[in-house]
Length: 431
Image (cartoon, rainbow, N blue to C red; front, side, top):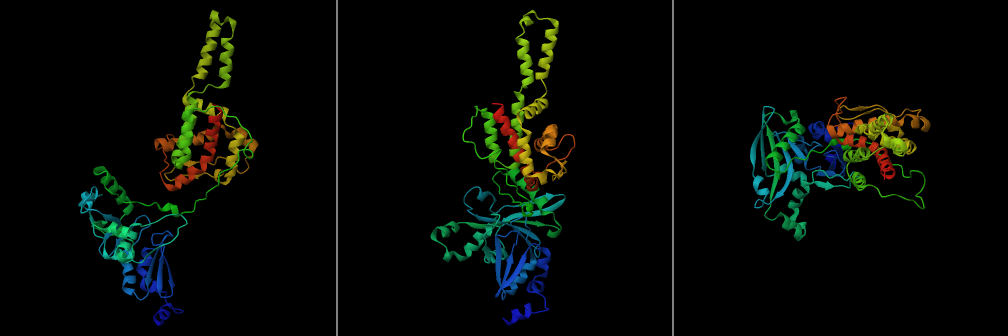
């Protein structure tokens, strides 16, 4: 206790500044605390599920942390002293496929005129020592980083494990995957290298394991808006619905169960599908009136011209028919209720990762009355631009993209209550 008091004394550097200065510089996301005679290292990969606990007396192991870097994107360790990256992998059975094909694989990877030595090999002693100090904590996000370390920890305490767990390690060989570059690992864009290496590995062997790249934008705080519950009032005591087209039903069912990106596309396909079969009510009335004219059998010239005009209106292009579908079947008041539920979001211009920009959908002073007057075609045009970016990679008129990032998924999710409500109204009213 005397040594701890000396280290932690007033006006003296704290323990981690004294012994872990380089580690703190290279791993700014990590948190330290001291409890009794232990150093606690929290958030080693930037999440709250993992903790390492070291005895303060184990200074050699603590100081050895200065030789490693932990990047939140990877279940890996960067070894500064040996200049190699160790990606944690698993225990493999070398006698079974597909493990047999790569358990001892060594190869060269040449990328951007740089050579990288790649291999599957035994985990380093450093990994086992770190794993032996691993503690798992409840996570608010349900994320588990570096799950491979659980096995590397458990193999060191087989005497405390049940028989079934001990059998797991029989005949198995522990493996990590290593990348050793020619230049300093701290100068590398590891994510860029890993993405290209993953592509190559999967190209040559569909069963080859690849490097997991964890998106770090999950650490950012994105506001989640609870969708509006009632469309008008509590659930009606009685309601009537006509049979809905089965394909539209399938689109709606899949949209509810998939990611925001694909859900948006499926809801938009309801517009496309209904628009393909759509003939607006005015055109229907005019055609009925024309066919009921007793003199139409004589085929007068003016009647033929009128028929051509009517049929030309019916044979509008796909986008024009979709606009008609939305305009005729969607209730702007119901859509406004969804927008008002997340009004702050829709009052701002939105910039997606990839450079695609959307102006604000509504202004701060927009009222239900002004919305009813201006909602078409503005809303339809915005939804169509998003759809074009998702399907065609680039919005044709702007040449901008919506990158497949988690941040963009959060933004697209904010549009889902609006486009879902529109698709539901079309499904009900076009049946």
